[in-house]
Image: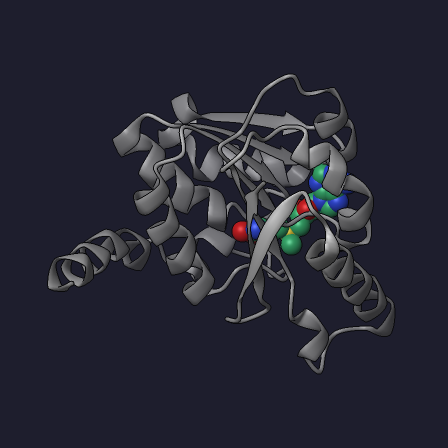
Length: 199
Ligand SMILES: C[S@@+](CC[C@H](N)C(=O)[O-])C[C@H]1O[C@@H](n2cnc3c(N)ncnc32)[C@H](O)[C@@H]1O
């Protein structure tokens, strides 16, 4: 057991070195915080995914955590964002990882509908209003045992959560829990994260 704790502390040094403020810069949108960032980091090192899909690049904070891992384990990252500004900004900020990252400037709904690739890990942090309608297409990109992380699971408990977002997240949470596509558990940190394993 001590060995596992030692290992976790060791791999989390990578996230400690990635300053959220440095990566976020002037883009202060809702994103994973430090605790969920560490969770993703530990998951990467335990699960060792080779093909990773990120829906919602945003500031590139999560991408930078995955990129550090990809650099060591030669994994490939596809990251999708509808905003050209976010893509251009991340390309610059994460230029040292460019050989591992495929940037896709496209609506994630179109990307997942048309992609022929299979992904070991998918991180959904794009548009919560589309989470429900895109779950089946996402599941088609994964085989049994594939991991899906969905952000914002508990954002409904936050005082700043607007009522329309509350409604769609509550609907999605119910839909996901009842779905036979994934076995789910909740990581109850920050805005919450669904940890889902493809059945
Ligand atoms: C909450 S941010 C992602 C934060 C990111 N995890 C980070 O570490 O900064 C959501 C991102 O999803 C993008 N987005 C929203 N709707 C989208 C869509 N339909 N297709 C692709 N990207 C989308 C937004 O442009 C935004 O950059």
